[in-house]
Image (cartoon, rainbow over all chains, first blue to last red; front, side, top):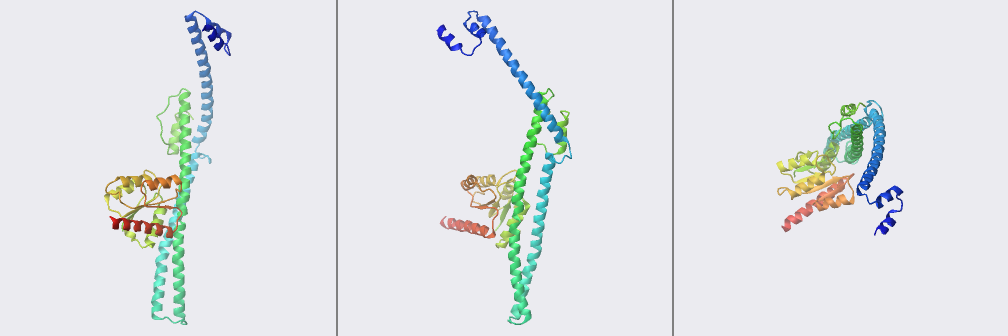
Length: 214
Length: 131
């Protein structure tokens, strides 16, 4: 049995470990094992410490960029710009729809007036009747065009949905970054602030960052 | 016929309303809600004959609204037409399984809207006659 164990353990193990495994002194074996585990843990903690410091340094730089209001590339600005695009496009679409609402009754009235003229005078040659027929054609083309114009405004909804998705994505990246700032702040020994589930304004961003001295 | 148009984009609500009026529905009978949550409250408070809803909305999505309508004894028979930019196979299947009456993918034309509405009313008339 002990011969089999020696064969199983002898590959890749330092000689002092092999000696311990084969030793009859149980206390010495346990102490040596504890020392080895502690040594390994210390290596791990040192590596984690270096990682946390590096991460904290990187996030500090990012944090100061985030908090720097007025930087054109900052995420808060990007979000605001997209919100403006959404609002402007919505206004433009509504203006077009207002235009349709204003013109459609006029086109319909023109058509009705032309019909009234033709009821009274359906001559093929009389200028009034000819003009009335032309007015009918125009009014009908107008209504058709206005209907198309209404439908075409759905671009705002489709484009707006995409913009909203991008805004949502930026928000999630921003919250993740801030969470990272919070986490690395805690790792670096500062007290973790109350968790901010969602950061809605530049003020909140600044406040959160300031808690870590960014 | 009282219709509830549900969409978080005011432009789209206005477009659908405009098209419905063009198709002969009465403008004052068309009401609007900007998400599923508000729509459900309106449906519970007042009798409607049909719902035209978007899918992607804050608070309560169109599919959640549809599920809530089908789960509510007073509302479960209400025709629901989904008008959405979501054209994933899975989503269309999910809507069908939840009991949607019609599904229109944006952008759409007035003719498509008319076709789907006609189909809904035909089916309703047929099921009403057989019941």
